Image 1 (spheres, rainbow, N blue to C red):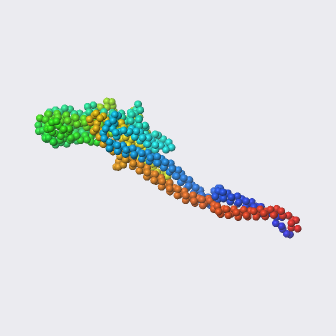
Image 2 (image 1 turned 180 degrees about the vertical axis):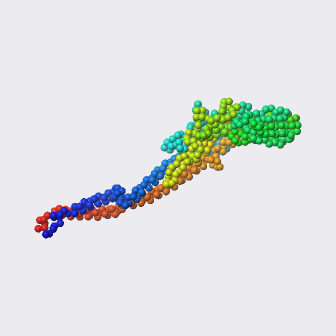
Image 3 (image 1 turned 90 degrees about the vertical axis):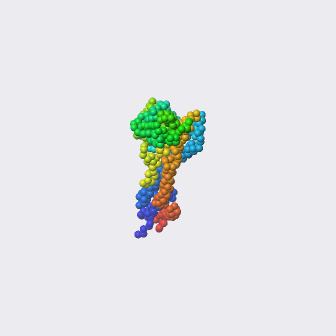
Length: 501
């Protein structure tokens, strides 16, 4: 019996056409998406590799987003540091180049604009990016520095820098202007002068004495309170011979005071007249010593007092609050007390730690690499920049006061180093250099990540992707095959037994 295809049994051709249609659909999707499959299951053995590659790309993308955020923060910080460095350099130059000339407001040319500069420094230290304050350490949600008006003058109930200076100056000067020294009258050519108390931190401290005065007995400094004795005898000093005292000042600096014996009338500054006997010489010596100490207290002593008051106001941490004079009365005060938040403006409100501020804020920017980039406004260089600018803003001078020119010179001597932008001490420029180095690290890491992403993406494309030219060729071939299958199916559908009879 002759068997005729399509007659008496099902044909496989429709199944083949259906399979070709599905393959055609898959190729069309591949051509449209460029991917082998729309699901990982369609990748077969390459599925694990594709998942690993995508995980790597996601991780690197996370690093890149972190780098972008940190880069923006450091750029803002760098701009702030650069401007602060410029302000300090301008102020230092002005201090160095301008002469002592007091204006109507009691300030010199170099002091003009100091408060505005201090205000700008405060603004720079309060820089923020996306509500994150750059100079607050870990406490980046807090404004790190209070306003300059509060820093200088307090806020009514709480005192600011100006009050600290006033109280400290009174304590260092004393009621008689002798810098907390007791200088009694000489007696029969003998003079013993001393500190007005033992152990307190105010005023002048007797450090040393040297002498080549003939026939004069010198003792001290010794005792408690510390004292020095000078006793003249019938054997009088010779003109030109001298005695030199060394004093410790409130800010830790030292000053010397030299008194030279003379027979010239009237004696020049720094000289004492040799009298007819030891009693007259002792009286003359005491008068000159008291006058010279008064001048020392009003000049170098006042400048040192201001510098120390600035330190006690600005330099504090969690364990060591600002220190202020325990008074009133301030002229006879014998101790410092801890300032409190209820009586003193604490200028810094950010993270208060003594550890390295860079460690306070970190960012993971690569496998095994964490960038440390914390900044705090109370870092030595930043704090000192604000401190010295604020001191310059509040100090006053009087052209009619003879000693104020020398006082200003002493102030300049102490403040000018605080405006150094580079050198052996901590400086704003050094912090800016640190930030710049961290920016370089970020840039290098970012470039490295871009290369890694490119290589990883290329491998992923090879794993998940298709060759569009190859897919196109397959698609054309499959369309031709499918067309032929459709035609064959059409012919079969028209076959009947009659055609074979």
